[in-house]
Image (tube, rainbow over all chains, first blue to last red; front, side, top):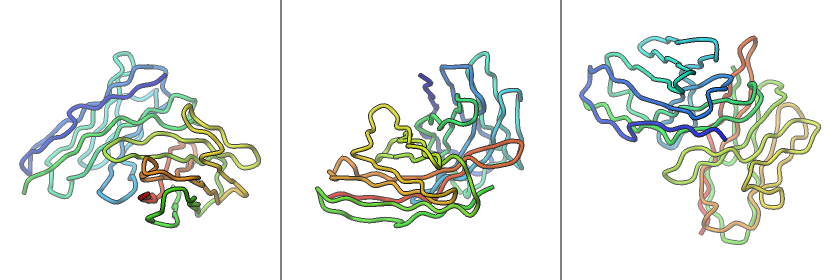
Length: 113
Length: 115
């Protein structure tokens, strides 16, 4: 059974810093991995999706990497802004793309102005 | 992408009653999913709902407690039956959509409080 772990559980940094959020998964036979953002009282916003054949994906100030052999993914946020404050969730899809996702518990990020 | 709406957005219910949550998608999709997010926890998959077949439930979730309907390719409902305070959670539906690369898109969630 796939298990996803995210560290740190919470992070508070000053505005402008670059930061890295970590995600690890136990079953390397994943189809893809998604990073989401969740704002309080709201649903999930998909940030990046990395296919199993890919090593990284970039969108604006966000870069996500995937290392299947070590069971790790990282989300890099450059030049952080207060608007980046949210909970970031990592989710692994292990079922050929047609199954539900296995989520980590998330990293609660606060960017101090 | 897919745009998903859920009704109600939130509700407060009494113990022992049932609540039906609706999920509407702006395009036809084969696969829909229902998740639960308990307070302070991450999302847990409840069941997969494909049009034309019975929902498939994950370990720990049963049809009598969480009956699901999937009458067409754009709509699904999840009922939380005989509720107890432990059912207080955010319930989210999601769909698998996209072209060559398919990914999951989520609705805004239904925040349920059971007294």
